[in-house]
Length: 353
Ligand SMILES: Cc1c2[nH]c(c1CCC(=O)O)Cc1[nH]c(c(CCC(=O)O)c1C)Cc1[nH]c(c(CCC(=O)O)c1C)Cc1[nH]c(c(C)c1CCC(=O)O)C2
Image 1: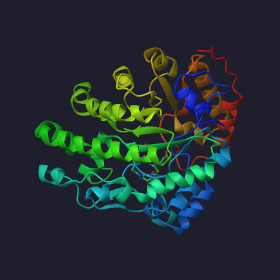
Image 2: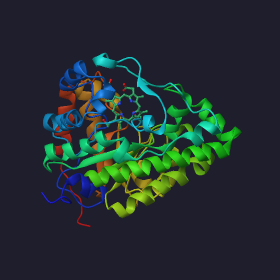
Image 3: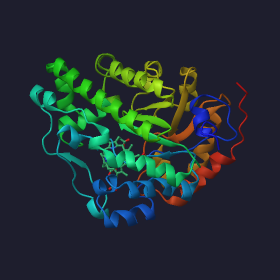
C-alpha cells in the first residue's frame, strides 16, 4: 500500500475513507495476555528500553484486533532520565500491575529547572528510535505507526510533583514564579520537539501529543502557560509532513482554541457529545471519544453506545474512532474485538472532497 493510502492517514487529512479508522489509546497493555506474559519477564522500563520487545508489543494488538494504526510502545516519561531526573516505576514491576512513576529528585526550583538538559534522542534514547525502525519492519506497511511525546504541562506535572500526586506544586509555581514555569515549559517543549523529529526520521508516520492533564488549567492559564508551547510543537511538526494529533482530557470547554494551535487532529474525552464537538471544530479532523469504562461491559451496552457514537460522527470526512482516554487493564479482549469489528462494518458515506 502506498504510504499515504492508509485510511487512518486519510482521515487525519480529512480525506474520504472506505471504512472508519479505529485505534485505541493504550491498545498494547495489561488487558492482553500476550503483554502480561512479556511483563512476567521484564520490568516496564526494561520493556521500554528493548527495541525487539517494543516492536513485538506494538504489533501484537494489530495482529490480534485489526486496528488501523499502531502506536509506539514507550512512555511520556522515558526522556526524563536523560534530562537529569531519576525515574522509576514503583510497584507493578514484573507484571504485578498498577506501577506508578516516581521521580527521586523532582524539580522544585529555578536552579533545578536550569539544570535540566534537553535530550539528544540519537545519543540518549537510541532504543526508542531503534524500536521505531523495528516496528516498521514488523508492520511491513500494514498500518501506519504513530509516534508520540507527552505535552509540556503533563510531563511537568510529574517532573515537579515527583509522581502521580496532583498538580498543586506545579500550579503554585505558575503563580508564584511564572518565569521559572515558563523556563520549565520551554525546556520540555524543546525536548518534545527533538524527540518527535527523531521519531519521524526513524519512521513514525504520524505524531500524537499526550497532553492528558491539560484540563487542570483555566483558560487564562492555558493561554499563558500552555497554548504558546503547544503551538510551537505543532509548527515544528509541519515541515516533517506527517499528521499531528493533540490529545487532552477535561478540555471540552476549550476545544476551539485547541483546534487553532496548528494540529491536524484534535482528540478529546467523553465529556462532550461527539456531534457537538464536530460542530465546534469544522477545520480539523477529530479523534475520540468513547468512555473506556464501556469496554468493561456488558457487551450489548458497549456496542449500543458505540453505534450511537458512530451515528454522531456523521458523514463529514475526518473522523478517527478512539476512546476518550486509555484502555483499562480489566477490559475483556473480546469486547475490544467486537468494537473494532463494529467500526469496520459501519457503512461509510463520506463525500469526495
Ligand atoms: C501520565 C502518563 C504516563 N504515560 C502516559 C501518560 C499520559 C496520560 C495517559 O494518557 O494515560 C501515556 C502513555 N503510556 C503508555 C503509552 C504508550 C502508547 C499507548 O499505548 O497508547 C502512552 C502514550 C504506556 C504505558 N505506561 C504505563 C503502562 C503500564 C505499565 C505496566 O505496568 O506494564 C503502559 C502500558 C505506566 C505508566 N506511565 C505513566 C503512568 C502514570 C503509568 C502508571 C499507570 C499505569 O500503570 O497505567 C505516565
